[in-house]
Image: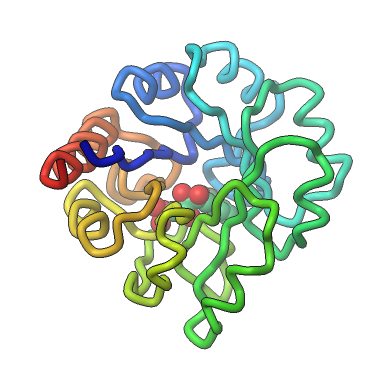
Length: 214
Ligand SMILES: O=C(O)c1ccccc1NCC(=O)[C@H](O)[C@H](O)COP(=O)(O)O
């Protein structure tokens, strides 16, 4: 049997969606702490979401160029299992909190990908996302998956514009360790509003593709 593709559903803001993510068999749920995002949650909201999380769903807190104090303020109140840094944070910055962390890497069209990926040696994994000149993430855009070097694919969480319709092709193309989605599980035109049916369809599409590789 081949390994299952790990799934992170990002930008959850309701307790029922946290429970649904676990029931569907997702591995991780992402909570956005970047205040400029329409998916952002306050510390109080996040504490409530964490209280709704069943065992073994990895709660991941997403930050963009935060201060140390901002991350610590969240960690004081919210039982996060993993941190995700999605800005220009260095390896040293990310590692100082003593928690498992992943690094969001935006795939700039001119980036020397093989070189860039070596910059965060202590990350548990690298979440590769589309690059956009003004938005640090959650853009709904895809990038050319073939730019991901073959030797790195087992460490990669693939993100950027994934949907129930294209995630199977993405898995087939590069066999990443995991996949991450936000906009692709939301109601059309309603950024931040997750659609339970699309959450279920996304997880089902991943599992359907996984079964083809057994
Ligand atoms: O989702 C956001 O609002 C966000 C804002 C700033 C930085 C990162 C953000 N999201 C990071 C994620 O992990 C998203 O799931 C990832 O960017 C993919 O988003 P999408 O293309 O909408 O699936």
